[in-house]
Structures are given as structure tokens and as C-alpha cells.
Image (tube, rainbow, N blue to C red; front, top):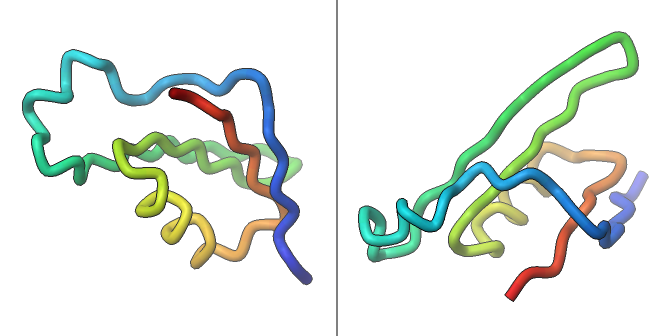
Length: 70
């Protein structure tokens, strides 16, 4: 089974702009994991999207929702 990728309008921020100066190398990745009777949800935020995408891909999700920002 392959992962479905979808763009969504909004996702919660887990990293605040005030944290940028504390992580000049851009390595901060923050995750929030929650679960209920329908399954597990992993919400992630990162300075470098490639790091977060690689981590999520290893989890083998059915779907990944992404938000464009810039």
C-alpha cells in the first residue's frame, strides 16, 4: 500500500518563530502523537521539511497531509 499525499489549507503550528534563533542549524523537529478508536495521528512541524518527511515516511502512514507555507 502506498502513502497518499494531500495538501490542506491549515495545520497547527508546533514550532513558534521565537524558537528560530535557538536552532540556527535548522534541526528542530517537533511531533505530537495522539490516538483514539479510529487510529493514530502524528502531527509534525520542522524547520526543514525534508527531515520531517523522511521521518513520517518511515512510519508507513496511509495518508500524509501537508500545508504549503512560505
